[in-house]
Length: 560
Image (cartoon, rainbow, N blue to C red; front, side):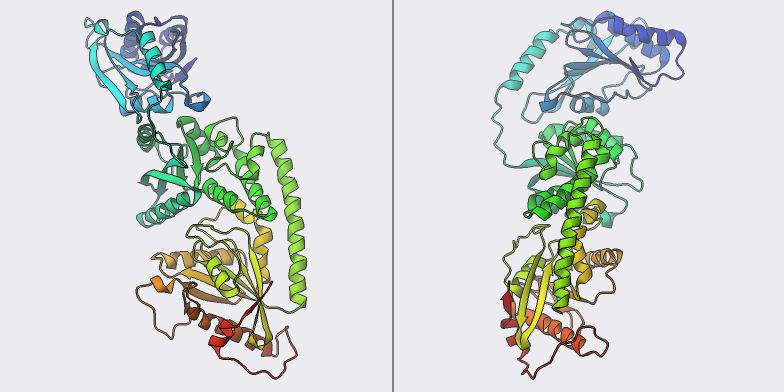
């Protein structure tokens, strides 16, 4: 029944605290005079803050022992739907000081009816009380009353609560909102990473359909093992969440299972970390059975270690909403055994898909048709380039991970040169490992490519970093041995183009004339490869007339 810092207390003091739950606070009073005087005396004697959680009937539900400066509250067991648990915090300060920001924060985090603190300036002085509650405005804010003698506080607490409950159910004229409203919290060890990840998380949230209301950032060399962000920043965030009536809190970097569990218990909104946000976007984008299976597998593998009881981190995955879309959402309330069984079944189905893809790749290999795979950071324009090269009917949108399911198109160019172009899922910094493993059937397509087109967004000021990130991912996938062309897209948005003698290519996927040098270089590459003595691919050469590069690019025929 006693929670907090009890070490060092005398047996007589512990006995007093253990007997507190036998007492009752008058239901119609915020803080009964007898109980307040007792708590003040215990706080003065121990030099620590002493608090109790009292329900609306006056029963003491929890006794809390703090330090000389703060009072740590236990993890709340909050009802669903944003309802209040019907508790108020009554505590005594050992010294004269006002309610702290932490006291006001618990109004949001624990959905308390009120928080009250009592003091006595000297043994003969009357007990004084200050208290706080959240306003009934559309954007709630703490309202703090100054210290007054407890005997002069005229408040019928039961009537006050009844009036607030009636006000809460009246319509407030809140605007109709489409989509969810959220706050972003980004923590990073240095300024460059902080700015980069902030911009990327804002773009991820926009892609997921979240309206970003506020962005909080923090430079921190070492993450807090319990909450990642530390208690002070968490208090600021809780105050902001209460003011804006937000739906979810999105954090970067990704949370450990323990951090996700603690934050979900301390905050009144749903928790979504960077990995879950990416998985949510993938769930929105998956159109084929293969894509849906792979997303479901990634979701279940990521959430399996987080299936510990019910909290907002897990409950937010139910019933849709950001972080909760996709085929896996109906499985996330099952126990660990059933989730593992589902993961095993999905693994087998994806292995079958991988086998089918392997057969298709072998057929293409037997026909000796070269394969060009387009890779790159997400939103670099890969789908737009595939459409420009092949006329493929793919989604082209200025959003991250606009297309998820891979597309393959065969094109015949002049001199009867046939080439297969494939578009893969976009890469991103710190690509979730569960996602990479789940999409192994898709990413295995890259292993059989004869040429990689590494597409870079030339208009992005941070394109050098993203280019290096993609190259690092390709190295991790053991694809460094495959020939690679670096192609800078969106040249029409670049302020200055580099010198013409550069080895890299610059084009705009929406401008067909700029594609001519790329197509010419691809055809030349495969022509040289066929004529090498040690080349494994040989083809009966007939006498042909080479068309000009411009004509070659224009006359490619798509073979579905």
